[in-house]
Image 1 (cartoon, rainbow, N blue to C red):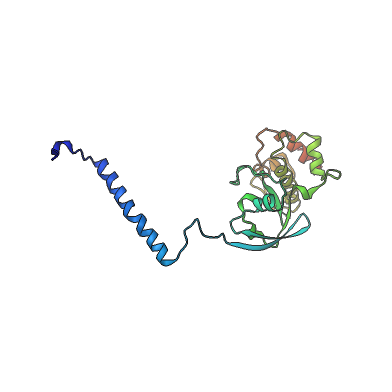
Image 2 (cartoon, rainbow, N blue to C red):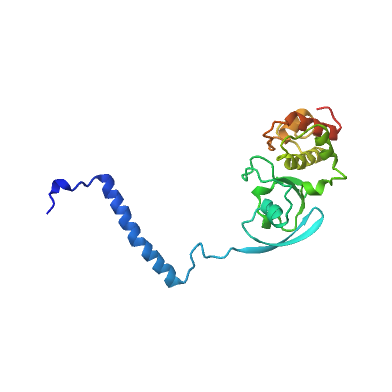
Length: 217
């Protein structure tokens, strides 16, 4: 018979033994309950899919997707429009910016099913190799890119920014919210602040936008 002095039961060891015992008891019970109810495990459940239609760059697309699919993944993985880039996938870098119903959005932050019936413009829809959009041409002229990874989102956002200003939509730096905003350096910096360039080509991007806007920012 072991001496009581040989049995070392500390508070930590007692908690460990209790947790192990609870796990050993709960696991078979949970399995038996699932089997009795006929409920499949999480790994065995089939994904929920939904049909949707999008007009992408002027072309009507019909898709059936897992309802968890983001618009970004729908564009890249299902429609093979890989110009739109996946950067942070958390809405922090702007690399995935596209234009939806005339407004720019981070496509990684919206589900594809939420955009059913929407009109989507990606970088592929702005211009072609032989007929560049004016903003694309200005980015080339002013070296508004280096590695180029953020460029599609930068260009889409820049096009939408000028449209926002033309529509009179104010920003956080607009001095008078009731007056029509102007294409100033402060306005451009504020409105483009959600698009991050790791290479630091910001001054060249601003110059490209200024040229297209026809102003001296």
